[in-house]
Image (cartoon, rainbow, N blue to C red; front, side):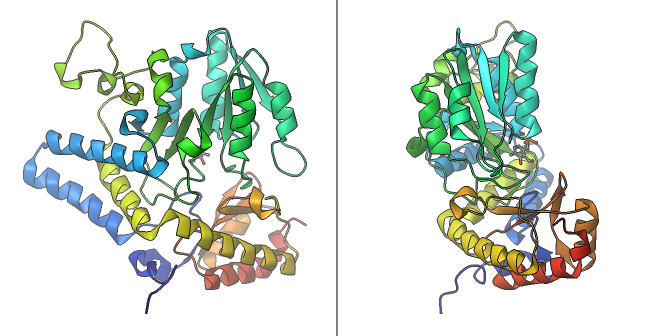
Length: 383
Ligand SMILES: Cc1ncc(COP(=O)(O)O)c(C=O)c1O
């Protein structure tokens, strides 16, 4: 008998025997594979001492995993320690903007993007925000209006971390390119749960990390940059792993790599790389397209249940406008998350909402358990 999701893989996640896990938008559940990868790191360290050749090779294998994941070339991938690190290096070198000295960003961005973009005001960049509409989407006509002949870059989030709204990425990219602007896409809340193909999207830059739906842990991210843009970008925020010849140990000039490695910094996050590679391999085995379909089914079931108990959804109702996470309004999100936790349900509170996110390992029973839990604590639901 062939098992389908989630039965085929649930036993890889011991935590699921103890709790209903719906916090993957914050961090993916720990698998036996990722635990083993961390143990392997300690074994290699213990047995081999300082195997830097091996560790640099591991870092390169993270790069090739990211490239395969996004349908990019390895030379278009920087292996980073966080989205913040990748974005600050990128923005520090974006002379490619030339006279186009304005960045347009949506109000759905994560602080990583907001703070890095506003930091550019210190070097004379103008920033314009595009607020959300009442249907919890970023209105494309307002975005198009904001992107003018001064705009060099448009920063958008793939799935909003606060409310689960899914951006029409392809359309934003079309609008931005038509107006001559580049697009930076933050896919952290999508990668691993949504198929991403940089060629198909025709996107310029993409950032994300392994912590959430890629089942890795903190400390490992990526920055994709389209190959033809690389020669025009010279980061001033840098580190020795960005050099064209790392082990030349040059201290007399700055000569960054011609590839996307120019966005890297110092010594790579080796333990996180072991874990991240194991997480990506596991997602490769499970299949992101199959996961995406599975999540859509669970999300539809959740929405039906929320309607049944009268819970107010913050995420757009249209299935084509939401990602793997659904946010619901709470009178006190922390208290609601705490009440559910004492019932054995782990969810992720944020910004007044309770976020419920599904992954390959969640089951229909998990969704029912969450709906029952919310019904039990309905005094904490905002109507
Ligand atoms: C959309 C989004 N971007 C970025 C981040 C994190 O950024 P960083 O890797 O800089 O911590 C998160 C969550 O942690 C996120 O949800």
